[in-house]
Length: 506
Image (cartoon, rainbow, N blue to C red; front, side):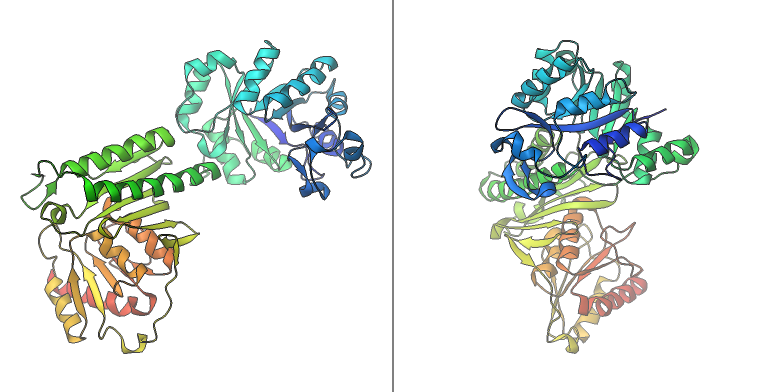
């Protein structure tokens, strides 16, 4: 049976971290009640999450710069900021254990004096350095080790802190993490789980403790039993911190790859599947660097690459990288190549960058947040010339390996009849991304690959373009076959030409 932790008390009914919220959580039978502590200017330890008093109490001051008398004047009755000592007294002798979240060693030092003076047993969570102070001050303290990574806690950190619980954001949970922690004789806690399906998923996975803002809902879900839990879908998300770091890493790698590719020695140019399938020392060096940086900055993330392979796993963030898209161009002195990098979980992309190497530009996109080129937003607007259709426009495509794709000649004929010009430039990444930046009105790729095309597809989608699969369905990641990217006003006409050409060309 999983244990419930009430996040900042019973916040469904009362303001967080107040006596009323803690009392209600105790009455509801929460096994743990997570509270946060801060220290006032005159050294009193209060129960408060934020550094400032603005969000909940309307005072734009840091609590560390305000005396306790001024803090105590805020609110009324049990709906006010309490002293830690008063919350300890409230919890003493009940079946609920206070879980004290501390952000710094200095706050821990002050809070620990209050706790030890009360004689009440508590548990501690929070920042790693703060918990090191907890362990130094109290060798017997109950510690919840924070774990905000997708890899596994090392034996060294477990030996150092001797935690009872490993505490992680629920999106980082995995069966492997739970197994390793359980084999070490510890429990696994996860936070902050408010969605019902997410509750079911973490319970089915084997989490021992679930922290929530919705204590009543969690109790209901727990009562449903395992048969209900196991039907819940896996959450497909990144944590907020993980997304921020992924965006930063992707941008840095794209800029580095642009510079490195332009200036590096090609080394020996080799071939893979055939004489037209090139690989250079640059391809290998760029991919090796990408893998190294991701392993260091985002441990637990996977990489699937053009040169070194790899395999995606369900529910695990995976980066798809083509270090040099257009290697035949690079090997033959044609300055038209790209760097492609996209992060996805399962078939849901989150972050993408495309390095336009020889222009030294970087396309970037974040799912739901738009696309940009060198920091300038990409927002496709309907053209004033849309009524004339494809006439006078440019559309791009790529060969299938080194050969025309079936029906490509008929596609060219259809464009010719509309006085529309076709371009084949030798980089599927740049070809597919082109319409997002106004480089032609559309692009057709006959065989989609996430390594080569996912980054560009996300850029196009976030810029307001249309992406269609073989059957005309909108998608950023086709199940099979090819993909068409276009400005919205040209998508249907272009897809019809592509479909007819493919059907007749078989």
